[in-house]
Length: 431
Image (cartoon, rainbow, N blue to C red):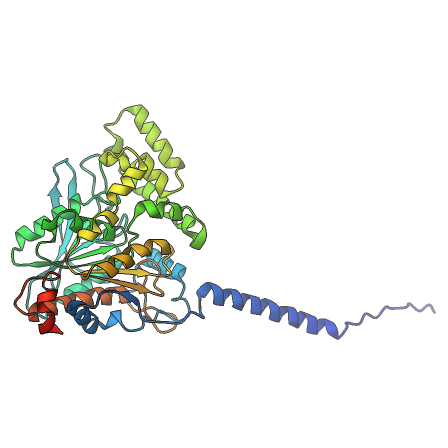
């Protein structure tokens, strides 16, 4: 009988241990990447404040605790500026309310039609005064955006009337009535809305609020003409970049993925422009339409769109001129009402070099407070314990808290001149 030899293969006892070691190494690598990407080791801290020591500023910081206490984002993802920005961009806000408002239409001199939504307060203001927040949203945004609705609902419940500008061309169901749409720094529509509020509510006082691009517009509006500051109690600007010309180079860099964000925003601008193609280009010569549309389709950055289309709405001869004349950096030093400028250190859209503008301004002017949070991303500022964010953000709370403090100051300040000119004459009475 023939016998067959069978080979017996044995597994070295070292192999399972080696595989286990590889698994542990992979898990450790993934955890390391997660910790780095989510910035989990970053501490929480109060905002970094730049301001002059004046009676008004001391009162505001004492009366608005959000500016001096720790901002604590959700533990697992809130320390990532990218995730904060992405969640704001995709979701807007959590459990967004639906405040009830009335849409107003304002014909402009050039044939355009500005629109804004007016929301009456839900209950009396704590001081008993008539206060209206005039609000300018971010790029391509309007009153129906979730972050605007959340803020308006919160402000209404605290007794504020809210008027929210809808950027020209931003609402998908409102047609343009002239060959022009919103630009980076055009203040015409915002001025029309403010003028309407002043006429219709002669007793109201105004609080000016701007988000991102809207922050540039409101600061430029106030600084363009001293009369624009009449009946304005204060201004709050959140996450703006102050100078488009300085930001131009940083937006083309891959640092913090700004080039990618630039591409996404450019894609959104393309959609807005193309949705109004007939209104914007219908009366233009055929060759010019083909040229402008061709450049629009191939554009991969906001700068290319601004150069080929946006600057032409106001007749700017070059992109540099457009950015120079539409940036608030050349006007903001003329703002004399109390001014709160808020930015986040991990905002992927606003390069840290741009933050020297508000920091320098706050160091020189007694009416300015510059607040720089460690976390928050771009218009994120979500708060929460571990994973799920709260419906209200730190941004919502700090704006209303600052507004309440300003109203309280106005109510109880000594009978002297208005802020900030009065600070020296009131110092002894307030300190």
